[in-house]
Length: 292
Image 1 (cartoon, one colour):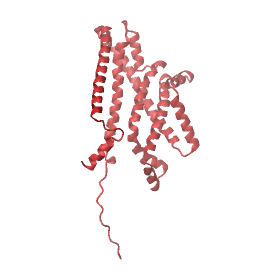
Image 2 (spheres, one colour):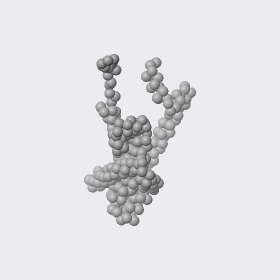
Image 3 (cartoon, helix red, strand yellow):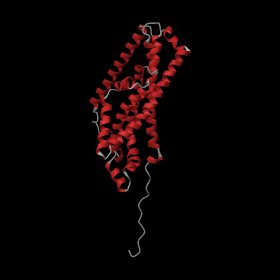
Image 4 (cartoon, one colour):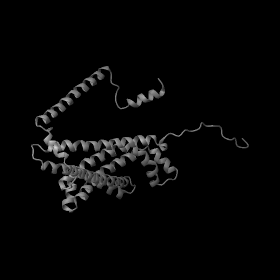
């Protein structure tokens, strides 16, 4: 076995013990039992749907109407608009708060820490309602502001942790070259921390996307609000179930698209020429100085 293979084995088993034959059999049994339970649960759900006649043509015919399709598309567009605004502003706010938490000036660091801890602890729905009711802000700005304050404070901790995860020697080497703190942060620490931060950033953006559904509580006409309007105007039993069966896969698809985008960015980053190892020529004897 080569040294490279040994190194690979050590990396793959650094966090857990290699399962033995008995453990592998138990894991296989657990997998079979879990699969059976999940399939049984899905079968039970399908039985309930068929038993309540949720797949009859009469309950799905309204979604063919152009007016309902336009209402759903409008709600989806409003959801994406709120998500784009909130995600961009959350990234900016997170970067600002993270910079403040990493500041060498104690008052700045304390103020940034206070903001982060306060907005992380405050329920996002409470912030949205406070901005909408107490400050009398329009639904879209109120929703975006609440999502920005919460997700920005969470992303601030993600950014700070990612920056601190870079080896201390990288920072010291950059300072030894005469770089200023801003240059060290921009050109040395942040690019290396992006890979470690990317999964957490995407996870938080998925949370922001799902939390846009809170907009219907303040009468913002987003996707869930459109579904509620449609269900309230249908004249058959359990009208919300077909609406949920239409809306849920779209939400799930958007979240999966975000995850796919994160994977694509990570692979592209690994293939980037800037991140590839540079081949170094073998050392050769230098020129002999005169008199040596």
